[in-house]
Image (cartoon, rainbow, N blue to C red; front, side, top):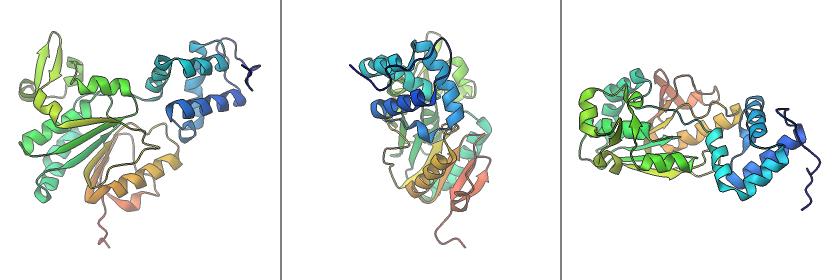
Length: 278
């Protein structure tokens, strides 16, 4: 079958030319729904140059593989997303969340509605479920956990197994209460699994839920363009209730264009400004 890029190729680890890269971007958008134009161009291109060169002799061959091989497409999605996490990651921020943010939200509402965006293998939403069960047990809290990668979501739904290194921030009392040891790893108890609902989602394309008390989106958008980040933060703001809280990654901060919508509480934790605020 004829293709407009039939004569284009790379040898060894040579970088893709502009036409090849544009063609790859179109394929990724049509097959995976991932808009690479919303990612920082040079950083993403350098990553993909090496990745594609290791997958096929030339970009066209790789694009053809993506069309017919679902496993290859899933591997690319995994490569484009960062899936390294641990329970109670950035422990000091989680201490602030437990001691200040969550109690404040619980004083206003019997049960909380929380979203963990870019949840990876489930460490973050399960951490939230554990904190909620400690602070306000037995209530109908809702923890939504989403990720672009269906493979990691399948693992998350099973509640593990998690290596001990992923649990280094978990106190022993919580470890005994909310985890079951399986050989050298750990599984989350059924009660905690039941508190979390997992769903596949593309943050740059799919609709968001609303009336949220807390949104966590940590170490997810580091490759996004400034424009994509700004649009995302505005959508987060609209999804939060009055005085809802946004929790970003430790090395992330709000764009200047979004800072007027939030007040910093501590580190990378922000509260949505009330519409009645001066």
